[in-house]
Length: 301
Image (tube, rainbow, N blue to C red; front, side, top):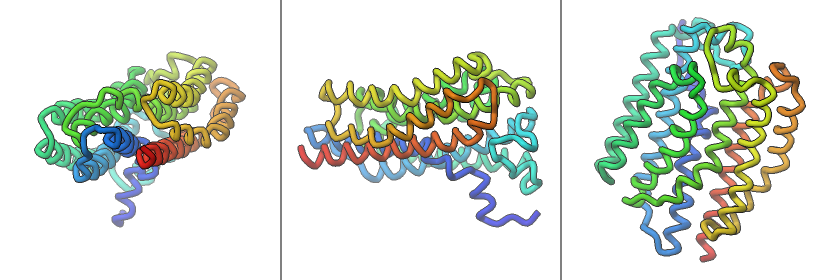
């Protein structure tokens, strides 16, 4: 089939990019807030490079995962995940895999440039991230995908960004990463909870399958609500600005999505068919409100 540039872009699932890019955006905003209190200055060039790297990084992870999900028979016609670029014949499975590894190579080159601009510490973090992205399908099929996502799209990027933009490690970035990071994991968890029956049929074992429908509902609620508790705790400890409570603007919608999950019958697909997309939107909203809080707090110091 004839493909356009737009078709190649859509195959990467660009609507999912905020799930990973927010790890860099929030971390840089927090480090800037710290710099206003006497912390290290921000390297804005590395900040932009880190953001681009995470976008390519997630695009590659999406494509590689799509290939292996197709090979394992996870993505079949009628599934809710909306991945159709292989099933429709637009791309062959090998094209998607090779495209994924190409973008992973681009992300790696950006990582090397950042390393040259900052230090060797970033290299080891980058290598760990590449390995986690490459082996994500296997980890997902063995009930470890949620842990992979927390490391790959929250904790490791926060550590790497700290080294890249300030030249040193700010330990508190790991605590900050748990706020948006738990919501990032909730995106995958909502997806896997919805797909329990489909994934079981395909012969894979996700964490959602291990936990079971009812327990999955409580886990989702915790992943969505604990970040707000952490925001309050960090404010009370003096670690962040009081203005980060702006994130609570997202709370009513978060509660609404939690109720959707809790009111669904365990293992029932339809009520939560699009909950992963809705969760991604809330993760973006929560993250951007946190960024605004850090900026206002820094300006008023």
